[in-house]
Image (cartoon, rainbow, N blue to C red; front, side):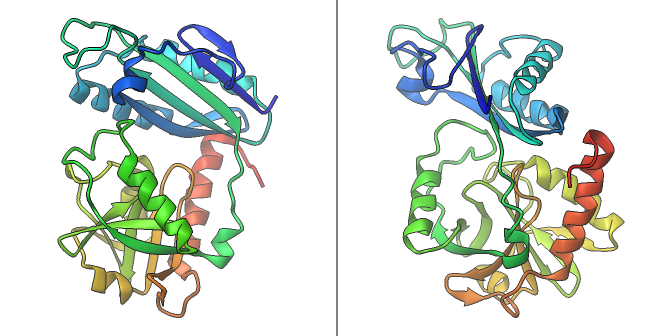
Length: 285
């Protein structure tokens, strides 16, 4: 089996499970989500992802639908149903179904849905690199909540695809904030820069891991904003997310970054990150 779905206590094919029409995730986008990976059947970074999930739920004034140990067991059960060396685990928690009304104060519960699929890691891009465009950041002021409301993100991604690029990078007040579904790092003179944590951006789990890992690789890390011009003049640029760690970006807005090829630091980070995964989940390649 290459995929399995779960909603409100029931497993089934993702395309066959039923969600009520008055589900508030459907009506209002009122919910949060997480995505992580499992390698060799073992969840990677699950505790960090669930920390962020619970933070998002607190900010949304929603409860976790079941205790964390039970949630992890349910995730592991779903992972075991799906084939492949790498499996993507998508969790979504909504406020559940209720007659349509803007206030949620009379709703006390929440509902869990999950999809687990065989995951293609697209590691060929480590050699070729990704391309990106920049777009104005028109999102709301709570991008630190991993909410279902992703219209600016999907529009930016579609705009990138129309331009023949892989990624879109949000820029606000001439400052690089993050990508449409990833955090952004740039490297200049062996110093790595990434935007500081704030409500303007998602607090990435892979970003968290790299903040700890980069000093161990002898790289100075500065969590501070940088401008679009600084990004274009960088020695290296790369994106990070649960799915890519790191993804070297070799061209932005049609302009080559350095010599237009993935840089050496991205390769070093990838090797070091793979060692972290292998220590937890075993060897994969």
